[in-house]
Length: 129
Image 1 (cartoon, rainbow, N blue to C red):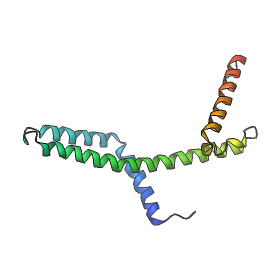
Image 2 (cartoon, rainbow, N blue to C red; image 1 turned 90 degrees about the vertical axis):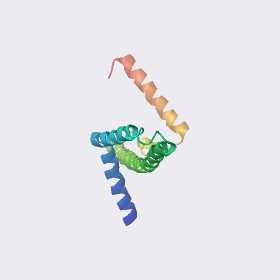
Image 3 (tube, one colour; image 1 turned 90 degrees about the horizontal axis):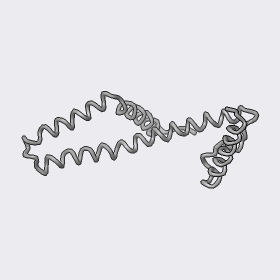
Image 4 (cartoon, helix red, strand yellow; image 1 turned 45 degrees about the horizontal axis):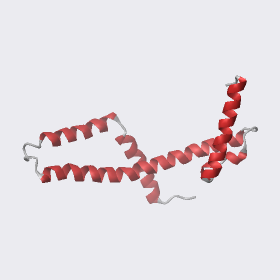
């Protein structure tokens, strides 16, 4: 499926941004901003405007970051599912019905989960790992 230039740009932008904001440096920059804001409180007499600056700033940043991080997580999850699907497909003993299991209903997923719990219990009783 061809990707538009916009979606390709957004993908690259969200991955890069998600990576950058997950670094220790980004955390320390954010923490420093909060410390500077708190230290400036006496200068602005802890006014409503002073409080509004941090509240508005953090709300906007959080709102935008949710979309960027969600995009990255969606891509990572899809890639992981594709890799697992390939492994299931490659193994002769694996059940092909588990390919794309993430698209199954909650009831079907629960049924598979119970099957694996029973299998695990049976293996424990037999002393297998």
